[in-house]
Length: 70
Image (cartoon, rainbow, N blue to C red):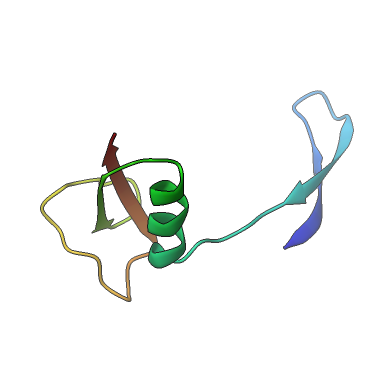
């Protein structure tokens, strides 16, 4: 997704940021990391800002914790 974010900083100066965002599904993340040579890939679910290795990934999760080793 490409967008333009227009904000005014603390000094009253208007700024424009061009943003380019890409969202990845867990399968895409695992595939990309495997292609880079990572052998153990764990993807855990979390609520925003509360990262833990004990919660399994669920469709309602907005954020993911990805842990890998070579």
